[in-house]
Length: 458
View 1 (cartoon, rainbow, N blue to C red):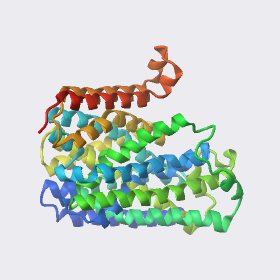
View 2: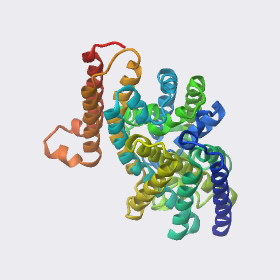
View 3: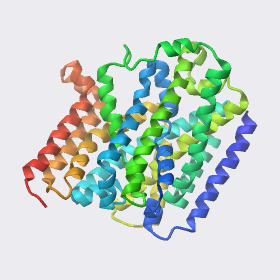
View 4: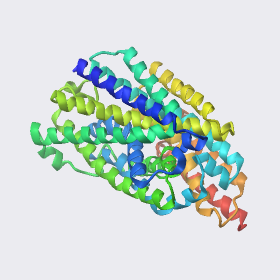
């Protein structure tokens, strides 16, 4: 498969570079580059939104999780789908009406410059880990496809992803997302059909073990993921960037709703792939490959090649979005520039930083992503939600609001990266396990107080 993969990869990379070059000529302003001109229709927004959320965590990560804990592994994506639908109901129209370019820009328009700067720093720092998680997954796929660790090929792919993102900006990201999503869905559908209807195997145990909770996934895990993961899909910077590129409020609302429904369907597909592997492949057989990557070793070559490019497309479509959004936020909201050149430089810098993390050995995909989300979610989700809902109705006590973000962020960072500090303090086990959720609750309470204490109306 090595030669077929390399040839297909070369064609694929040439295609995305040409898309970047094509869009380069269309870029006339910062708005064109960073928010795709703010004129995308519902079809384009749904396609790019789904391509953005279907990445390493929702393919390789989900199947590995399902292999370990069973059907409850579906909750990651199910809560993501719920977050999108709730966004459609409560936030989409309000956010698009404010006409921001980035999530921190939105916070700045509602709360003020300190809010813009604080949220910018949280996102930019956290999203380096998110990008690194995607690149780590990309490295695993390339290694498996070639049968060995080939840093030259990996580095070439990463450089080209950074390059076409820097050249074409958000316009190229939206355009390549359409192609990538088609490949993703086709690849996952092909392996699902092959496993259940061609290869067969032990499918009865799959059906008999469809359960929403079990010994490996308890109610506390359910609530943690509901807020931490669902919150990112409800009000995450990459998700909301698709709101900003929509041509109007109705498009933003419709797109989030449709994408949420379709994402739930995808969650069933990828979960059942993981369930088949769980009940048909032993841990000894799988070794260190991981569930979905191991499946590539026994699939027919055409199906394996299709799945390989489906996985690669999933990762690329999330990676380019994360890079362009983090870079746009850094330039617009931290540096306060509307400079296309500066964003292009930032794309290369942040892409390079994430690449360095991977090369230094930080390759646990789910820990990188979950760690980043654990910082962002408790610090930003509830305060920003409260601010959006209060916009145009009540003034906000800025100091209290900032305190809510800082409090949630500190709890998130401590829970994600310094759990031993909590253990040393002698805190009960239930506090240690739910430190991020406690941070979110405190953040919500303080954010709510920031509106009530202000007690001023517009």
